[in-house]
Length: 142
Image 1 (cartoon, helix red, strand yellow):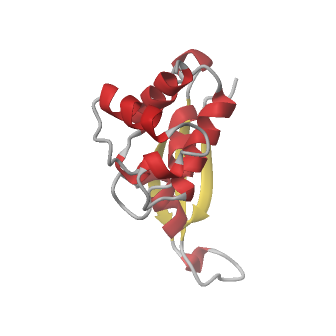
Image 2: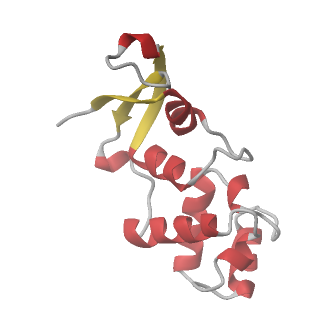
């Protein structure tokens, strides 16, 4: 099985993909997805002068250390987990109780957030992947 993947991206995208942290505009559902299945590491910048024809942007290399299936966060369904994460980020600036209310009731969302130690006013950009996992698992039992 392949456990390491090196990929070349536009440098700006590579930095966002590998280094985005919570509470930043760069933090998106793709960051949760990437961290679910792998451990990304920004390796180095590739200057645009190294390409022919020369592009208008630099490149960046990311190494993805692919996790074994047993290392994936424990969720009841990957499909429903990523659906919840995508729904949460569709209203990135909205509170989770609003952006997820088409999936769960506001009361259930607030109870879940409180139960897992997060404020009921939490926004998706404030949650780490483990927080999303705990939220999903709690809401899956409601």
